[in-house]
Length: 253
Image 1 (cartoon, rainbow, N blue to C red):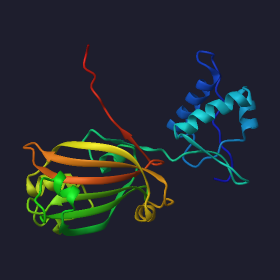
Image 2: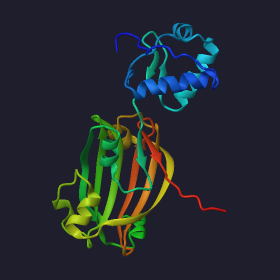
Image 3: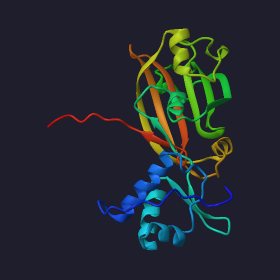
Image 4: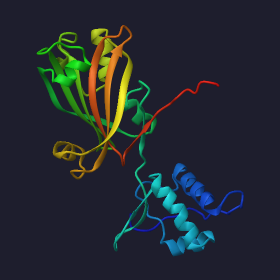
């Protein structure tokens, strides 16, 4: 944007430490859309004077907001403190689907198929899907986007013998809905593992990040209610655009 923006300065109440009140004020301003992604805040000295706090207190608040991914700070003449693109919360333990998660965040979702082929199952995929050596799988890789920017690379393998003709269908929508509607094999449970990885050359190009950039990889095997493995997947997420959300139940005692 061309100039700095800031909503009306907060009246600090003393009910919480000043840096906490500043954090809450800026987060609330973003929630009310008084500040939007890409908006630049005034220089620290000016902003601290407006709020009536020391630069050290302001820096403490901004540092915590940067750690949370709410703001970004860029060096240089064109740099400054900017409101970050909001990260998208993806429910790791739910079945809403990536597109539904983006809609909930009021973000335009997209999908681009980069691989759709039938191949012999790699050894790890065959083991995950309980397939014999040499059995074939449908491999589908898609780049998922939010607001036309890539956020995830999904690569899934489906047992070809169980799902014949899968690749003849439209593959840019919900694949789980497709499994349910066309084949009667809706995923009901999944085992998932999360690992940090570095972007290889292919992922860097498809996700528009530097090679070696940290990503989150989710390895998943999905099962029907009858226990049939119908998908094995390796999903890569940009950590600056996606945050994985896990909901847990705590047993009493």
